[in-house]
Image (cartoon, rainbow, N blue to C red; front, side, top):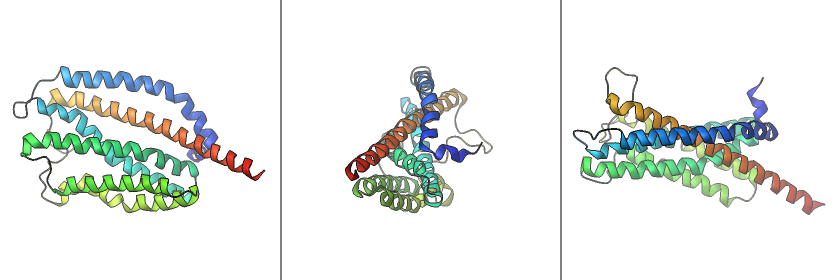
Length: 241
């Protein structure tokens, strides 16, 4: 079975309609479990105190900020190359979600940074690249809204998205290229433990809950975009009749 069959709007709607309800249930259960454990069953850090609990929001939000942009870029590239309209609509649906997660990451990072670094913001390589990526999110959304012709809007916004990939890449790997105030990844396959086990397990659960939440939101928004496109097509057909 080819994965490209789901580029057909009818197939996409049929599949996502089946999985959406159980996905929301799993998301709600895991989110309550993860954040409940993280906020109420983990101790304060000996250095950071209760501020450490921002970790359970900031890390998943920051990961999704970058990974959502990567999903948008891949979907845009597929749309441009293979002319699958569902791919464009998935990228469009993901943009506001990714922008929201990026804003959450920036805000929670500032809240954590003020007591740890003594400042709300520094023009650090990673922080600056995340901020620029946020502006690319906003530009992408604005471009879709500004251009009335859907085909032209899809192509131009797709190109803009691909241009911004460099900042998504830098948001993830800036600490490897420059000496930055921002620390390296909290979780890594490299040797050495960066997060104590008492925080590691609820952090993994928080990440899983946030990713399920993202997938559920993405499917809802993508289904909405497909319906809006279909409604526009019907209006045009009625106007031409």
